[in-house]
Image 1 (tube, rainbow, N blue to C red):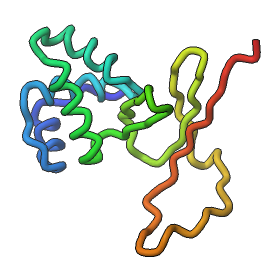
Image 2 (cartoon, one colour):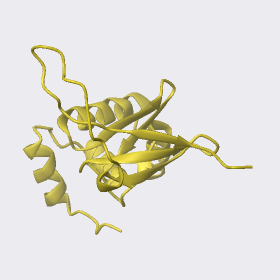
Image 3 (cartoon, helix red, strand yellow):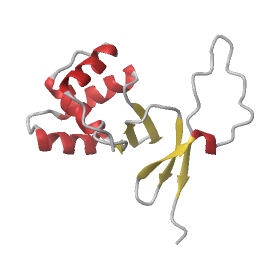
Amino acid sequence: MRAAHSQLEIFRKLRRHEIMPTKQRVEIFNVLFAKPQHLSADQVISKVKKQDANISKATVYNTLGLFADKGIIRKIIVDPTKIFYDSTTTPHHHFYNVDNGTLMNVNSEQVDINHLPEPPAGTTLDGVEIVIRIRSKN
């Protein structure tokens, strides 16, 4: 489990990513970084509302989008209706359990990718993220 972040550490991290620290953003940061985890927006909303009942759903969604755009968290799209926000930003892949809707980390060294196609002209490869869908054998 990660140690709790001080207000000063959170402010510095947000400012390093060119994000103005606000009370709501700090609360959302604390929820996301309480431990390494994958949370949906609804889970973040539920956890934040326990701390501040006045925070709006729109604020949470906007902040998650901002954090993802700035690289503080990773946005993992497992299907068009299911998005997770990952507090671990180092390169890794995922197992997605379609039966219970959970996402689990897979170390990058466990996945062997030997050949990738050349990217289209005028582009460069930015990264590869693999979501491996699993379900119970029963």
